[in-house]
Length: 311
Image (cartoon, rainbow, N blue to C red; front, side):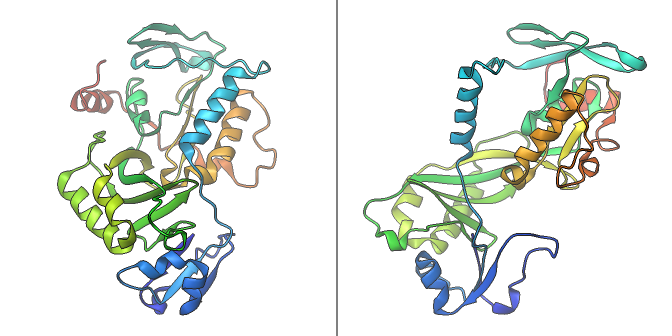
């Protein structure tokens, strides 16, 4: 990743506890490292270069992972698509705690027996699911804007980004034969349609950073997605102690790729009742939903009504 700055005095390394290998480069060395930056309308004078940072396509990854889960005979995985949870039945469970006993969906009822664990990992829609249990989760859908395009054949390779290039306003990433220009963090509920005025400003900013892609930026449609953003910026990960069979994995914001494997490992150990204290390389208890996912029977009903979610 190349994070560009117009003033060298603005360049700051990552947090002191970061293990991201990086270096600061200035002058013509910037363009030698990433020639596409030379096309920017306002040329940077310094860049923080994370020289081991990588980018990947999460859509391709998740589709390939789903295919492996279905086709691998050693795994017992069933995907149910186009199924919306509209209600959750709760009974008394172990140790007097409530227990999820059924999921009421638009395609029927999914029974949950007493030995089954339920993991709420629905991204930005997780607070809607937990509200059906009378719980409040401080997760908010953060809308991002993106213009994806195929690598244009009429633009020389040296003018195209070879890595993520960003000035903390617009991010341009290269993912094989695709380029993505992204920006904006907007709170507008669960609406995934681009706002006309915001989209206009987004495109203007993109054209300043990547004028060599003018034709593509002007002609390709904008796609919007929602990132689950927790109010304190820390992922909700672990067992919801208010229930006997409920866990949550939600809220990485922009850090999904960085932490997804570790988060999955934590959930897998908890579901399998394995030793969570076994070295993980990080302190998982700091990510616990305890004290953040709270009982809110009245407030959750108000939220469901305001969100127009069926109860």
